[in-house]
Image (cartoon, rainbow, N blue to C red):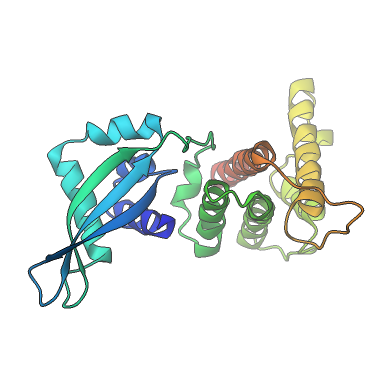
Length: 251
């Protein structure tokens, strides 16, 4: 039922309640169907159960009645009362010690971009880490940076010259944003901008070796772990956020 949590989060975000949506990060859900009939013909009274890591569970339990009601109403949008169906009458919050909060960098300015394919990459990065699809999250982390680069290039009026080649795409963006290390006199700026090249090159290589983007041979098969996925996603979000901020400031 993890997809239910993601749908509820989307509803809450649509209501501009990002705070409540974030509290449901890394949570899972189940529906406890009883044998008692509800208000509709042959509907069954059911309880929606939300299981959360300890950090979020304590905050969810302390929510006001108004905020809990908003979550309840969001759930009812997914499961409206219908004949011969389940009827959610109560939401219960439970602690699951096996769940843990992922230390994922949160996008701030990127939220302003109402572009589906970019928002989709962000959602997939986080969801796949929660679902332990570490290969997939690395693929989406790399695609996120590529998507931001293409957005900036096209928004600047230039043509995308090397679609699919992350390093060349970034070089084109760095020229647009005056981020080429060679144009800076200050050593610290040269080090930071040079570091971006190294990180992006590392992400491209990580994607090739550790993600699900390519087939793997029996002799050389790498299996990414949680730390690899978090590193890739956090790096991609940080760089994408910085590039977008730079683009906004430039304009």
